[in-house]
Amino acid sequence: MRAVVIDAFGEPKDVLTAGEVPTPEPGAGQVRVALILAPIHNHDLATIRGVYGYKPELPAIPGTEAVGRIDALGPGVTGLEVGQRVSVSGIHQAWAEFFLAKAGQVVPLPDAIGDETAAQLMAMPLSALMLLEDLNVTAGDWITINAAGGAVGRLLNMLARRRGVHVLSLVRRADAVHALRAQGAEAVVDTEAEDWRQQAATLTGGAPILRAVDQIGGPAAGDLLDLLAPAGELISFGALSGKPLTINPGPLIFKQAVIKGFWGSKRGEETSRDDMRRLITELVTMAATGALALDLAATYPLDQAAEAVVASETQGRTAKVALRP
Image 1 (cartoon, rainbow, N blue to C red):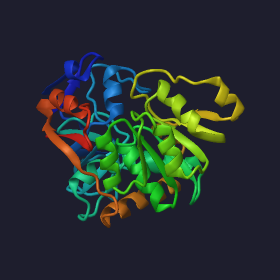
Image 2: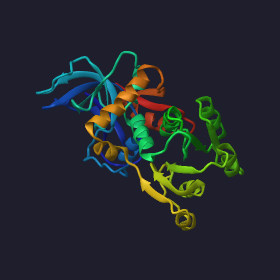
Image 3: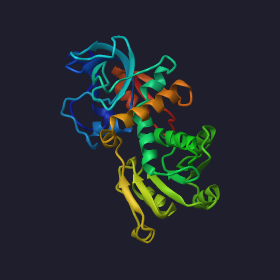
Image 4: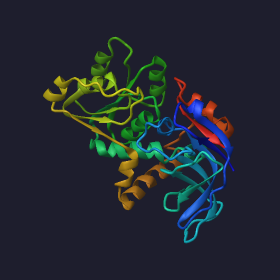
């Protein structure tokens, strides 16, 4: 089968190649899935660079989420059928014509959910939903998130609004402000503007911001800490800048703020089966009814994975890039 392979860690555009590898055979409790679409996530690129929390043995096939059709059932698998369209995340080696998954990981999909949404339904939406619940906020509370124009920022906005939670969205381009507002975001600020802090105070009406989600790292984390109310929490979700958090101890101490990390993969492992079923059911229901629609900016064949990752990291992109067979 065709697959995307890395033989060394490094810049994705330099180390991704496509080649022929043996088609995997499902073991006990596994299914083999024929790829339809697989999105390119930031954590996929971090894994390829060798800087993520998970580091595969080389050579490796990247890819952690996909939509596809079950192609074969391993021994002992029940309740699933060959030909079923399924969504799955938290896997490895999805950037291939066929990949394996545990039978309990795949989520059968109704026809009402299109392939573009289905390909992205589990990883980022589920992380955003778990993150929102972990923030422990209620209707009327304010939270803030930077890099808000990305997938998690857009999803957190939408999910929070459904719960009556207000979101101050921070971006770094004027066009991102317009794009988020068009999607229903109520309070969006371009932090490149000189008066962005005053804008934030005006948009929130001076209400306390109880939680802040940092996806950038570096000085941007300190900016969020400045916005936090006393006893607020700063959650590190990503490090798009590649820099460590830059934190002023003054507001950290005198606000008695808490800084902690969030890793969706680990959070998922710690979630009970019943609770995970509840979360996934909510997402599938939203997608099936049209309340959650996830577009793709572009799709590329597996043979053009290097070009696809360049497109994925191009500034100004407002939707994911995905790979197809």
